[in-house]
Amino acid sequence: MTAPRILPDPSDPRLTRRVQGTDQAGQPVDLSVVEERPLTIFLNRQEIVTAMTIGDYPDYLALGFLRNQGMLRDNDQVTAVDYDDELETVVVRTARETSYEDKVQKKTRTSGCAVGTVFGDMMEGLERVTLPDAPLRSSWLYALARQINTMPSLYLEAGAIHGTVLCREDKPLVYMEDVGRHNAVDKIAGYLYRHGVGPADKILYTTGRLTSEMVIKTALMGIPALASRSGFTAWGVEIARQVGLTLIGRMRGQRFVCLSGEHRLIRDADPADQPDDPRGAGRKGATDD
Amino acid sequence: MTAPRILPDPSDPRLTRRVQGTDQAGQPVDLSVVEERPLTIFLNRQEIVTAMTIGDYPDYLALGFLRNQGMLRDNDQVTAVDYDDELETVVVRTARETSYEDKVQKKTRTSGCAVGTVFGDMMEGLERVTLPDAPLRSSWLYALARQINTMPSLYLEAGAIHGTVLCREDKPLVYMEDVGRHNAVDKIAGYLYRHGVGPADKILYTTGRLTSEMVIKTALMGIPALASRSGFTAWGVEIARQVGLTLIGRMRGQRFVCLSGEHRLIRDADPADQPDDPRGAGRKGATDD
Image (cartoon, each protein chain N blue to C red):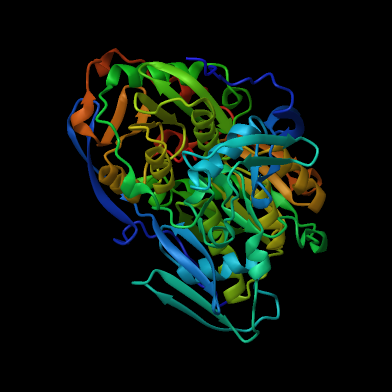
């Protein structure tokens, strides 16, 4: 496999800034705070959307966003991805002429924090999705949570950021972070697309809630399992059951809840052997949204 | 003041659903889970956006969304707000003929969880904002956090939801919850608009992160102080300083950080007298996004 492994780089100076304030006693405090900047995504000559993002991997973000909106097709040939740091734009160019004027008119503002914008019909394309009946071991889930919660990240450095991690068995392969959780997911989608990585043996782990948008994006990417340390909405669970996605929520320490795909879940680890939630104890800036 | 006080109603059967799953030991669990459903907002004959929402207060949500997007003006006369439960639509009708075809074309996908969709230029209208130089007492902040974190809510009942609370001094007046944090804020804006409530002596408290969108919306509403138990982005802090908004982040137990408006903050409460964060201990479904 030639696709690179990507882990967070909390030392990247472009991703955080020092901010001064005062604490409850009036004492000066000096904090590391995540950046948030606009990035306008173009598909050929059409301006599609402006995303508020932390700013890393603009190429994956643009490709993944367009892919998850159905604007980049399987057989599309991407001829260039041009990022302009000063103009804060990224232009994806394809061999095929594209026009999505109508689609861009119809927008869905997805759930809360979870989401962002979806163009056209959110459920579009879901009926064509067939997810493989992949087994999921609880030992993998525990090992992934332990590694992801303790490895160096912007979350641990500065807080107020979301993470989404592409995993295989008990290994985190690509760990993307962003102020927008939907951006982190789109960067993963862009990575899969750019490197032609197959989704069938993958697991997606996210720090955010399991809303309808999150479940739909995971299914459209062809990934058969989605796990989160956070909660879920009723509609998120309903869609996961419809499309046959294994859904695991509220992963904290030894605890978790399986909401869909019970028959694929192999409980091969003793919950009593698992340590308490390390992230809960070490929470810093709080990512409560 | 004739405007009603609004607090969460966790017993409303339309807002949660029982969902069955299995826990880490394979035992069945039965959970109360928040609903998430589409609501399409129309302004007169134009379809503006579909929001994923928990579903309460569709009239405030529609009015507040249109108001925060600059599509409803100060002098607009709203002739009707028609909500159709079955069609999942809400239509706001005005005496003035409206047309926002151009504006709806240009979208900003706001930060992560924080945001949702903003039409047109996000910073539009900010240069006209003058916020009153209102004092903010730390005793109010502590009293508000204590009340909001312990009063019955969907958050405490089911988790995976955000809250935004309109307050005056140490009193929570309107406590809105939603799967989308931007929806909760928009419902507050709709409430202010509908009842003609003045913003100058108000404080906005939110469970979510202080991103650029959150700061901009608060300033556009004319509210001079914004507080959160969560973190913040660098751009959120920068805009708060530009517009003169008092910004308080990371409110947990006795701790908080003042990031903007230090000269208005009166530290009249002894931090040592404050109890530990009750919500941190009682966290349920986790609203990590």
